[in-house]
Image (cartoon, rainbow, N blue to C red):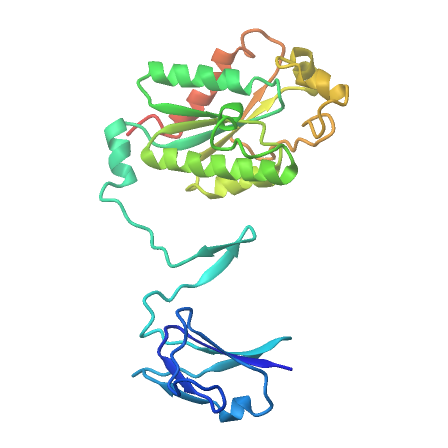
Amino acid sequence: MEGLAIRASRPSIFCSLPGLGGDPQRRPPADGFLNFPASSNAAENTKLVVNSGSFHPISAVNVSTQASLTADFPALSETNEKEERINGEKKADNIVWHESSICRCDRQQLLQQKGCVIWITGLSGSGKSTVACALSKALFERGKLTYTLDGDNVRHGLNRDLTFKAEDRTENIRRIGEVAKLFADVGVICIASLISPYRRDRDECRSLLPEGDFVEVFMDVPLSVCESRDPKGLYKLARAGKIKGFTGIDDPYEAPLNCEVVLKHTGDDFSSSPRQMAENIISYLQNKGYLEG
């Protein structure tokens, strides 16, 4: 047997149904629903009195246990809230971007530099964090404001709830990309240093920024060199099977196809030094005008 449920945007529907007893002008409860018992003549004996200057048709939806009638009254509703699903969760879309009275160009003029994201990617042990620190110091010496988002450091706070599974790695990159975007909008040169093994995830971060403001730097260092360095002892643990899903061992690293800067390991002490690699990145920034207001 099917029952009958009636819902209004606000409790402005009154109903009289013979046989229910009580006040013939029954007000619906606070949630706006009236529920009626299953009956062969319930629907045809139901009378609706709508107190509204703006009436919209009632739509009926058949479900397995009940028939649902929904009456929508936008004129009476305080908030006409729409919802969409993002990452499996409902998110209200009745939000509006609030523009600032100070624009990005104003901040860049104040800092005498242009905000951008320097995204350093490569295998564990390739020297990402070392180059990031050298780059930050070299730019500081030139009077430029930077901030470094190190992959390990971010996992101590913002991303401490994430694992190293593929889906969590994607979320890890997404969050860092959004934070890096904010720094760039402020006018800061943001240096993101993390393995970020999947090409698709890096491209998603690139898409967050205006054309040219995402500078992808590839630490092109052979796996054998990275493993010989093994500063954290992680390769040894991965080879022993104590770490699963380790990039370069049993999880892939997808090298960039069209990155802005390639820092290739040559074995030469000078060209492969962190300071010289940092200078290579700075040369790119100078040529593109990012070190000017």
